[in-house]
Image (cartoon, rainbow, N blue to C red; front, side, top):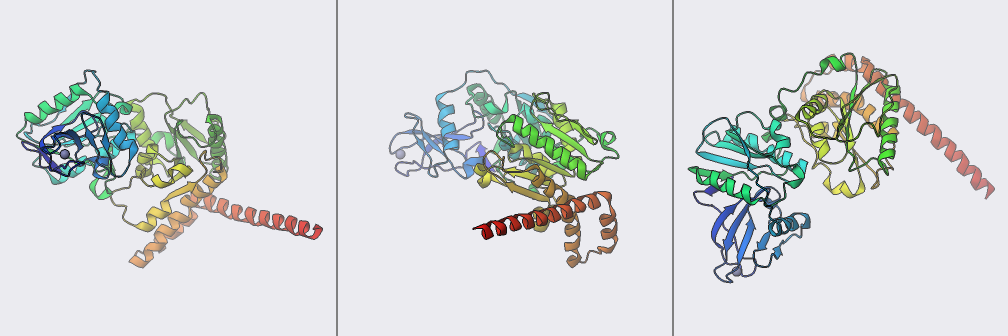
Length: 447
Ligand SMILES: [Zn+2]
């Protein structure tokens, strides 16, 4: 963490002449944590990213007179946001709602504001580091309203910012003044580095997803629980209708394999427009158009109960990947470089083999129309059977007695149904390849 008060412990250098900048003053107008600074050689005034979040990787410097950006790595989405927010300061009066749990005159601020939900959530996971390892400091969490219920117990204060997450990039002058006052009123103040991708040894998801509603009655006797994390701004298929058809096929095919299936839909979207038709198994459709804390907590309860979560790559997969037992993620071509950024892990996930067994990726074309529902079903059935078996079997080398586990696992109805599906698929594809082979040979003879 970085000490910012009574003195900022940070050195910054002029992007033009390399001189050390003077008069560094902290400014936090939103998601950006900045130092306002002056160069004694070229007499220019700069805004310099402090090493927080993405700025640990790609810090930006802005010339205050010309708004020229200095961004060594050319990470445009990040550097251009600083320019945009600096040139368009918001006059909106933003005053955080303070939830105070204890007095603290020595504090650490965790700035979780961002313009993307996933970025905000990942920053929030940094809070536990201070609760566990810096108990002499009061942890103050600057967080958008949508994430307040995920702040773990033990913080000194929550500074709830009543803005929608997408506006987190904006430069709120009123917020900047409010935060400056908070800092000045304390004896000592630090700033969290708010790592964008914290390791699971520093967060325990159970502490962030506490006291979820009891949904056991709704899934009793149902198995497996398969959840689809739905979104309408990144689709499985060419359009919303195609996505609806894919999800319907996925549900229908899974129902054929698992007669006791319960299929859960969570996420933002219009469930009337893309209604999934019920067959002989159960559906619980919890999709909604608008955020509510109650819905979010309900979604998390089902994610936690899910044997497998399925969805298109993105921040919508963070909580399902961390809470569900297994994941199948559909990755469009343009997101290949971002895979795993949207995965969370349990604190005791430390076996690489399990990570590969239980978190599966399917790579498709940009629209994901190349990903067939039957391929997703194959992976889900594999996760329900052979992944579970292999996870136990691999542990025999560590002295685990597998003899008591293997028989009930193999005899369970889910295992039986899932492995039957896999065997049938292999038989099908053998048959198909034989037929295709015969057709090709016949064509060759005709030639
Ligand atoms: Zn200079």
